[in-house]
Amino acid sequence: MSLDGLYLVDKESGITSHDVVARFRRAARMKKVGHTGTLDPLATGLLILCLGSATRLQSYLTGLGKTYEGEVRFGWATETQDAEGTPVGERIEDVDATSLDLEGIFAGFRGEILQTPPAYSSKKIGGRRAHEMARSGEAPELEPRKVDVKDLTILAVDGPVVRIRIECSAGTYVRTIAHDAGVAAGTGAHLISLRRTRIGSYDLSASIPSGNLTGMSPEEIADNAAFRSMREIELPLPGLMLDPMQIRAVRHGQEVVVKPPGEDREAEYADEVALSDARGTLLGIGRVSRVMKEGGPLVVQPRVILQS
Image 1: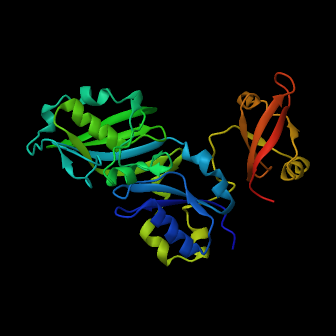
Image 2: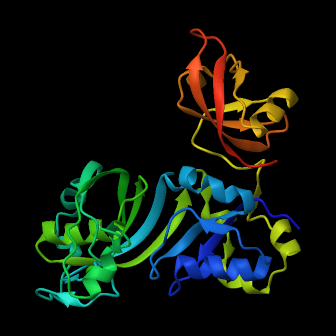
Image 3: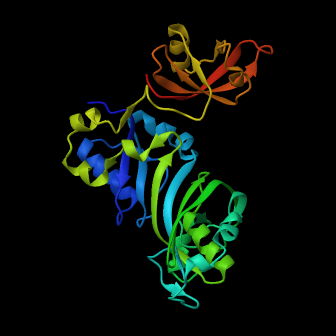
């Protein structure tokens, strides 16, 4: 049977995101499976799998904002910035985080900040992964980049451990925020747990535990509430509905002239738009090559076609 769409999975700790993809491939008996953003082996929580033709949407979904809950242990840093790494520098066992200016410390990580990715990351430098270079004794040179931490809330404090919730842009490393908070505090710190609870509008509460995938048939997978069909996929793009003639044209790679809905003026000037049929089924992605006149029809060139 055809499984085209998304699948929401709650990744368990101790396995990689690729392990989850491999489990699903075996259970669903399909090859075209990808995901929209890696979780470290230590981390748990929401992983969105792209199935079948939806694998062509990975680059659009990867950029969605993320929400995490995590625990930061003050007292020492580690080489990986999380609990899996070897401690580095001074180790302070008896830190009382309530004595720290936590609000002041974490305030420095809210909003748009420059963040240097950790050495033990999947970032590529000259075709090599940073973590491969770090494990071989090299010091990967990673450039700082701008990330947006829209919200950072302190949820609880228990001795040296501070539980936080972070809503941030794609590409933000929470373990780097933990590490840098330790530098700001003068005590060192590292991330001891992390759980991703949301990606864009997709919530962890609708997911299925990754351990359950091995015993599911393709039919059970399709019937599960964690499955999102092509009609249910939400992209961070303005939408345009096509009529049957326009659908035939874009499936042959031809540009079409589409009048945007009167209430959606944003679509007039968007570089890319999501194309759907009258039932709301996602058909592909188009590029607005030109606007015929202000407030008038758009000339749309198909870029990604999902169905034939």
